[in-house]
Image (cartoon, rainbow, N blue to C red; front, side, top):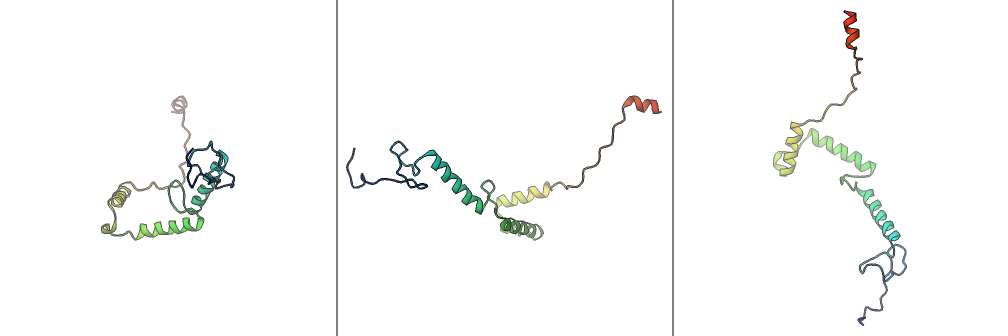
Length: 122
C-alpha cells in the first residue's frame, strides 16, 4: 500500500456519517445501498419541488397556474416569427396543421336493431 499524506484520511457517508467500508467502490459517497437509495430519493424530492423530472415543467401548484396563464397569453398573443427558433417555428406550424380535438359529451349510442326484427316489422 502506498504511503502518502492522504492515506490517513477516512471518508464518511454523506447520509448517515458512518465511515465508508473498504469494499464499497472507490468513489462511493454512501456507506450502503440503503443510504444510496435514501440519497437518490432525497435528491428526487428536491428536484420535484422545483419541476417535474419527466417534462421539466413547473411543479408547485402556483407555478403550474402561472405556467398555464402564460400559455394562454402566448396563445392569444404569439410572438412574431422572427423571435422564434427553428424548432419553435416547426412546432407552431404543426399545431396549426393539427389543432387539438374538441372535447365534449360523448354521443349516446343508439341500440342496433337485429336484421330479423327489422324484416318482421316491414
